[in-house]
Amino acid sequence: MASFVITNNIISINVLPNAGTRHTIWASDTTSMKDGVVIFNTARGAIINEAALADALESGKVAAAGLDVYEREPHINEKLLRQDRALMVAHLGTHTVETLD
Image (cartoon, rainbow, N blue to C red; front, top):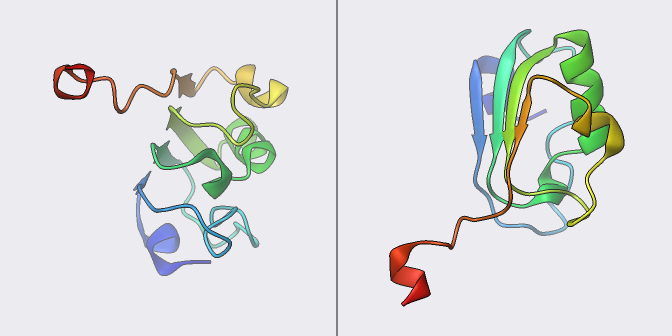
């Protein structure tokens, strides 16, 4: 697992999607990740394995998650939808005054 995931309390994911970044989070064992981490993903949905994220939220390994991108947009993992500590919003990153003009 990437060292930034092991050592940080808050993880903000902002990487380009490619074969090397797919399921970067939860591509391997998460036991070395800190308990109670907070994760934000505003990059691409496939960076995080949503099923594993739902399990981590349920177990408390992840304290909270904020997402505006999803692995299979517009469909969202049902188990993830049931998580109280997951804030999920529509992908609106480009909806600014500047981009709408």
